[in-house]
Amino acid sequence: MLRSISCLALVALAIGTSDQAHARKELLTPEEKAQLRRVERIHLETLALTMHGPADATPFTTAAAMRLEQLGYRIVRDAGAPVDVAVRIKCEEVKTWEGPIRSGGDADQVDAAARLWKGPACQLTYRIGSRQTDWHHEIRAETSQPGAGTTLAALLAQLRQDDFPYRLAAEWEQTPRLIAALDAKETTTAQRATIIGLLGTLQSPDSLARLNAALTNPDPAVARAAAAALGTVGQSDSIPALLALFTSGTPEQHRTAIASLGQLVPLHPNSAIVPTLVAALPHEPVANQILIVRALGASPDRRILEPLKALHRSVLKVPPEQITPELKELKSALGIALDLFDDGMHAD
Image (tube, rainbow, N blue to C red; front, side, top):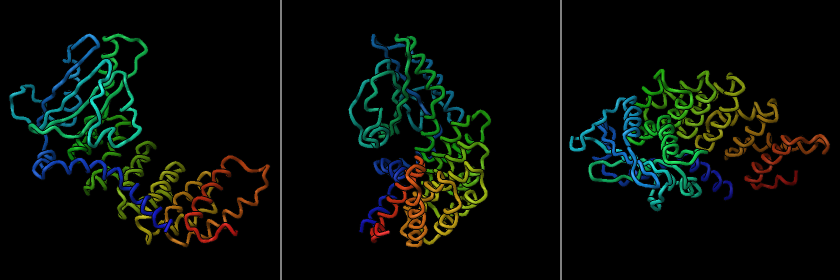
């Protein structure tokens, strides 16, 4: 029973990110969801506030417009002209807490810093027609020189580099815009990693194809993001590419693949993941053995028991004076993985 509960929890964890992203969309009608997928015309409503009152919000409007236009959106300046959505950006020298929201943003994270942050912040929301949605994004800034001018300048600098345009495109399920941004020359490595992660929340065939291709990206951050995204997506189509990365990739790609395969193990128990990881386990360095044990620990496949027990026995035979921090961590990982089976392995 414990084993079944554990596997169900791991499955829920693997798909949780995608479920959270789509939960708030249940509040929208099918027509509104379809309209979001076609969003092109955006009206910006910007507000800049200091402790002494309103400030000129024009720089924030200009910065946000430029970022959104890079993804191909058209900014409509006239508030009375037809638009698809209105994006509101409120930037404050001291954040005003407006109470909890129903879902999305920091509402999905009990201990999120957004609930505690009292410094400079920009709050981003959007409206479709007259309907205010639950999507929420916060941009924070820190400054060592207090003062309205310095604080707003710091927020403006953060707005110019924040990933909010990509998050909006993902919220609206506009995969082509994200893929175009992924290929754009001006996109930074950090931004590519963010886009890859967002593509992992979108279940389109184009997204999956790009995630598989990104596994072999020469930049480790992008490859790690792709592997993590594929693990979150959880589809069996990703397994061959991840196994290939595990067996023939660089050491960094090798470790990245282990973590993602661990996410896929409970979802696809009859795949080649368990045999491949079990065969590699005895020959890996201790740091990688820890990762593999944690990955195998998510599997309900009883074929992992004997290899894990054998490795556990070998660790127990190491003299105390030769036990390193890594071996202690490996022993702990083995104990957790074996305990989940609850079949008397402690007698070993």
